[in-house]
Amino acid sequence: MVRIPLAQSARVSPESVHPPLRSRAATGTVEVTLVLRHGSPLPTVAQLCADPPRRPLTHDEFEAKYGTDPKHLKTVRTFAKKQGLSVVSEHRARGYVVLQGTPAAMGKAFGVDLRRYTHGPSSYLTHTKPVALPRALHGVAEWVLGLDTRPLVTHNAAALPVPREVAKQAGVRSYTAPQVANLYRYPRNQGEGQCVGIIELAGGYKPEDLAQYLKSVGVERTAPVVNVGPNKAGLDVASNAEVTMDVELVASVCPGARVVVYNAGSKDYSLRDYHRVLAEAISDRENLPSVLTTSWSFYEGSLIQQGEEVAFERLFIEAALLGITVCAASGDLGSQVPVNGHSPTGAITVAATSYPAASALVLGCGGTTLEALGEVLHHERVWNRLGEAMSMGALGNTSTAAGASSGGVSSMNALPLYQEGIGVPDLVTSSWKNGAFSVSRGTGRGVPDVAANADLHTGYQIVFKGQQGVAAGTSAAAPMWAGLIVRLNEALGARVGFLHPQLYKLVSEGAPVVRRITQGGNGAYFASHETLWNACTGLGTPDGEALLAGLRKLQRRKH
Image (tube, rainbow, N blue to C red; front, side):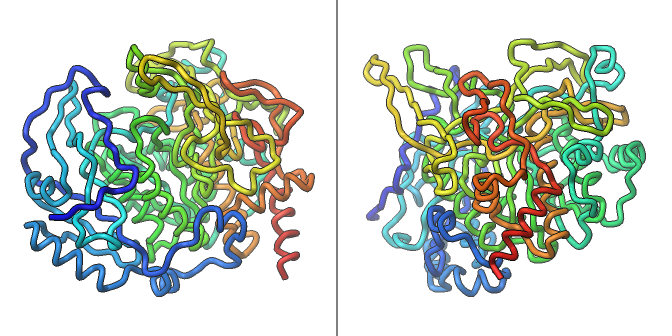
């Protein structure tokens, strides 16, 4: 069989990732997502940045223009039958097919040496040979997800929630999400007629916790909270806490909006599961979310292949065309991100950016420390507690209250047009080759775009496992921005969609739509008065009413 290697699909040997590893022959059933070519070429990220969509497409319009050629779907079916694989599902509009088969059949079909590796409690499939497609799929398929199920995706959480009384005794100040929304002057509507989607990879929330929380903050919802996928509070306390905080913050900030929790129910935290749940949310014709928020990410580094990010970028291009704004947490480790750098010790710490916040089509959300005097926002600075960690009893475990707003310059995504001249620094990359250390410079997408309160020391009140608690992180900043955008959509009577070009334009023109953060840093980068943007908090935190006025002004210019 003649094979075509997938572009940039060199696979990192798992032995270098988590030694010591045990491996054995893979057994059972393997399920993969075959990412197919669209019927017509999608606009590129650069094209969208230069010429943003003038109006959102409907799902029917998107499928008619970009849906996969039925001939290609037939080719995949024929290929699957010859290889002894079964077609689980076809998604013409989304441009992918799910295939299932034995490890041996999958290995033969895509030219890989599938084995199951075990590291401690983790068990996953991966391969050391690059993926190759048979010539029959050349020009039909672009990528295969699922041949590597390593747990590469994580949630951005520097600490577990802490009991509110313990936090209070430790001098921690906390706010309700509606209080923070008021401090940021969110428009006074409730998000009626809108839908916001929350992306989760695993874990679950308890409806009784949500009900208790809403009652405690005095919010009465007029729209439902809907679960798509499992809502199971598993053994992983951190994942359950992540889901609980996301849902409670969004549900209380926009009580008139339908809230849909899309949960992958992932067992292995793989890239395929993340891709699957994002695709499901973006193409949801029933709930039609206009805003999505995610606090799950993977750091750009030696383990993520360019082609894997390209598969995700396709989804975010689709979101932009459909008028869906995607908000993502920038990360909670400041600039101290350990990645495999092939150094003599096997690791190196770099200022790696977090994806999907690093996508030029996703609103990256960093974090601040917020201080208020009564109903007035008094002061904000970059959130950074890495040098002053504090241990407190957590709701479910011991917790260390530390962390900082992650940000930096993407090594895999180009500097977008809207960020030119805004103060994004050069990308500095370091590497080891043949025992020698080298440094190079370049340009890249700056992360984050914006920020919101994220410090546990000025955290958000939540209810978790029936107890009053305090939680925070850029995992809170992303849903807070999602809640704001839902309110903006209602007030404008239109989806803001791919917001970046408008937001950066307003800031460049001097419109007071954000509060610039000029104090603090995250390790490698610092805020200052000298630039409009920084790699800790982006353009700053929102002034909701001013942003609404600015967007209305741009709306009038279009007409």
